[in-house]
Length: 116
Image 1 (tube, rainbow, N blue to C red):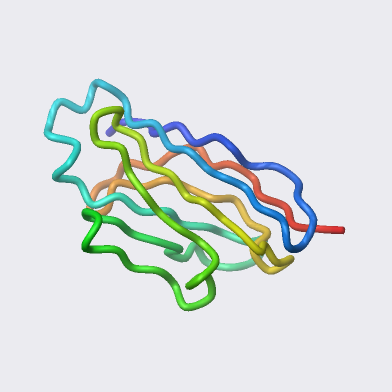
Image 2 (image 1 turned 90 degrees about the horizontal axis):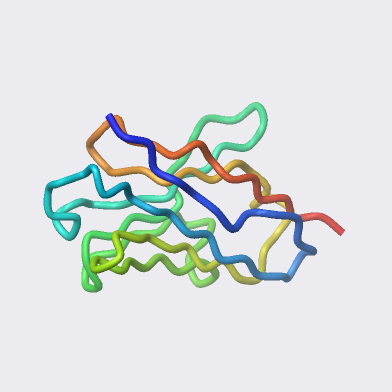
């Protein structure tokens, strides 16, 4: 089990944007490009939910609540995954986690708060 590292969270006004980043440790020796990478979020009192998943540029899924506003991407050479969030809404407030799908590998989470 390895710990992924998220960054980029913060406080933003409704309608604003944030970009989250996730770094995958070099200790993962398998080919990073083979991993399905995902962003999840968990709001207070709610279950953790998948926000976006990327296999490659042709295979991407989004939760209905974020379609058209969020964009997931990856840089295999740097072992990084990104989540560009635009037109943020108060209901997007949550702790956002990076995850290697199908494994027990998660990050510590980064807080995103959307409030005026």
